[in-house]
Figure 1: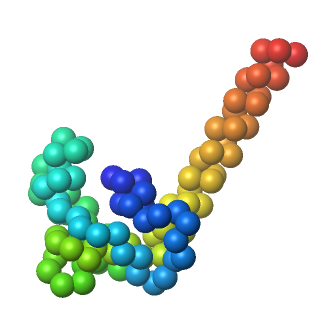
Figure 2: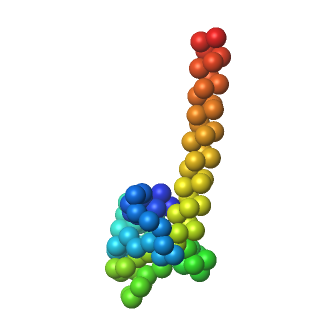
Length: 98
């Protein structure tokens, strides 16, 4: 689900404290991920309590935002993951074709 949220923010946009990504409805996420709406709301509430997501105006409506910190942390985690994957593939190719 975190990928879904971060992917809503255009990668070429400048990060600000609050990065607005439009509308977010728990029911839509629940349908997409085949989990209960209650579970989605729990996860969103935890992230909101940490200050990583929120809504300006009514909750679960328009003006959904993600914190720059969450986006940066996610991008860093992705970079580490892809580095490990790249090293693994390189190692496998070296062993296979050496």
